Amino acid sequence: MYSGFWRRFVASLIDALVVGVAGSILRAAAGDTAGGLLTTLAGWLYFSVMESSEKQATLGKMALGIRVVDVDGNRVSFARATGRYFSKIISAMILLIGYIMAAFTAKKQALHDMIAGTLVVKD
Image (cartoon, rainbow, N blue to C red; front, side):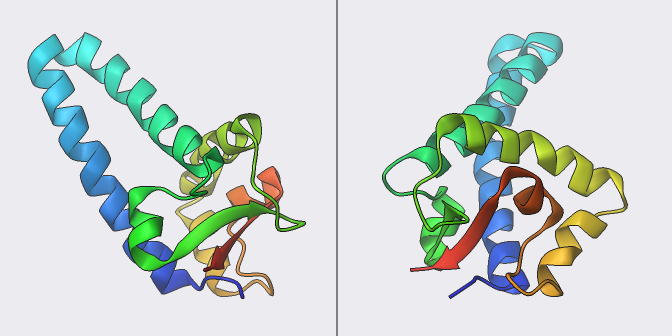
């Protein structure tokens, strides 16, 4: 069964908190410029490594009992998870409409899911 908008939203809030705390620590330790670069790298790796792992989920997704799969229901590769992560930029650039699409599409896909060929499903 596909995960709905609100479950995904709460999971993203948890993930934002995790990445935000890590980013604050990195900026404090390395300074604004280097810390900003390290935060960007850490965010990419956090999402891509976790979503392509055996758990198929970030900490936020695990807490809400959801995971990322490809359109056939299989675990996603690191490359596909990376594509999904960077596709979120497009979802955000269009006034977050790419994210809101998850509330209205048949498979509850956001724009970045459609681009990457992924689904977010309940465990």
